[in-house]
Image (cartoon, rainbow, N blue to C red; front, side, top):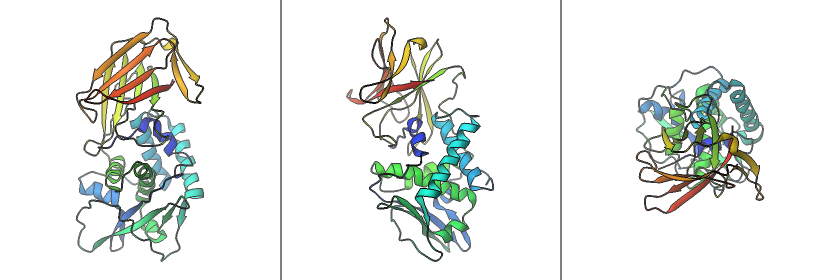
Length: 332
C-alpha cells in the first residue's frame, strides 16, 4: 500500500525544481477513439463510475481547482486561501512551461514507456498511445504536441498532475503508473475528499512534522505524517491517508495532554533543520496510542512532549519495532 507524506510534500512538488534528480523514467498515456483523445487517468476514473468535475475552460482554471483540492485535503492550506493557492498554481505552471516541458514537432511519435501496469478494457476502435515521456538525461517531459492539442483543458491539467505525482512514486521504486492514475482520477472527480482540517476549529494551532531521514519531496511507504492541532484544551493528531485500496481517509488520534502553546519555540538546529522545542519545565510526557483502522492499523503512534527536547512523533510497527521518528518543525 502507498502512503503519501502529502502535508509536507505539496510545497516541494509545486516548486520549480520538481523534476530534478530522478533516475527512473515514466510517462503518461491517452486513449484515442477516432478524433477523441482522453487522458488515461480520466478515462479510467469514468470507467470506475466517478463523475468528473466540469471543465473550467482553461488549463489554469482546471489546475487551480486541482491545486486547491490537494492543498486543503493534505493540510498545506485551509480552504478559502485563494491568494496562496493562486500563487502556487501560477508559479508552478510558469516554471513547467519554461523549464521542463518540451513539445515535439507535429507528427513526431514517442516510444511507449511500457509502465502502465494493469489496464482496463478499451472500447472497440480505441487504442492506448503515449502522450508524454520523462527524459532522464535532460530532466524534461517530452510531450506529443498532436495529442496534447487534442486534449481538453481538463485533460491537460490532469496530465500535469500525473507527471508531478508520478515522478515521486517512481523515485521510491514504483514501476507502474497504476496507483497514480487512480489518485489523479480521484482529484479530478466530484468525489468528496475529506480534508485533514475536518472537524478542527479555525482557532486551533497547527503543527507540522517531518522525518529528517527521508529525502524532501519523497512519498515514503509507511512513514508518519500529518498535523498536530492544539486548541489549549485538547491535543489531536490528524493524518491524511492515501493508499491503493483506500485513497482518502482522515484518521484522528487524541492525546491526554494539554500542550502549552506558549512553551513551544521554533529553532534552527546545528544540523540546519528547524525544530519545535519544548520550553515547559513541567513537560515530561509520552503517550502511545494504538491505531485500529486505516493503513496504519495494528501500529502505534507516540507523542513526546519533554522539556528542552523537540516535539516528536514516533511510529511503531505491529511487532513493536520503531519504524520512523518525525520532528515537528513549525506551528502556526
